[in-house]
Length: 341
Image (cartoon, one colour):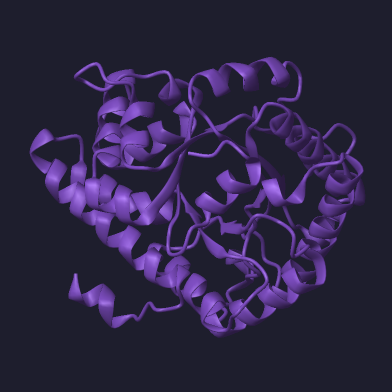
């Protein structure tokens, strides 16, 4: 496989393929395992992820790459094969989450800044040796209009950090996924999400240009334009698609390698329906696909429930969700296909 950043980015958004976000921190995966009654240990986490990576149909047909957590990129399967090698054997590309999480932004209550730049150059060299060819850094932009959140300082600081991270990735031969997530947790309407997302993406691309990042060798991992969960409003897939594409046409350069959406609190089917509506109104200047965590994993997690006897059922559930999102990435999904499963 070519090692050119542009080629890796293009492979990450190959037609109908998307990314599996399996980079949950130990704390997050413990919460997911608590729900299905599984103790979170290094072995149980490995067994669960190995089950996903060995799901041949899903991985070879629908998954272009896997975002890993530091623990996982170093783990070996039960039979001693490095998990990275299992991923590579399906033609998917191994990737790595490199940020150290969002922490409160000093002086700005309610705002956060993502940490992890210190020592990143050395860590990227290590991850490259371990097989990672793309990385991910998530900035978190919350919305609380009454409290003036997010502040311009928070948006600027996070965009600057994303650009510094992206430049270091490219120096290391690694494609950066830049993820400026405007959260859907608040009580804001869809118009507010649009305005904050616009301010965030405008600032992000200003900083990426300033950092001399090669846009063709980057992937954007954005939120869709949605009303906040506490607003009591649910937007139709058509409205989400229309506003999301309007936003991107105003802010996102055509030169970038592609766009892989986060699911960010949407249900499995909602994330699929919205992605489908976005692709159905194409053609667009960029490839638009998925980089889903929970929206790909919730069903297989439940089916697996920590039991070896359930591996086949869990892999089938994963294949179904991956197939649905594959169709959505092509604008060919239909709700009836969910019932067929």
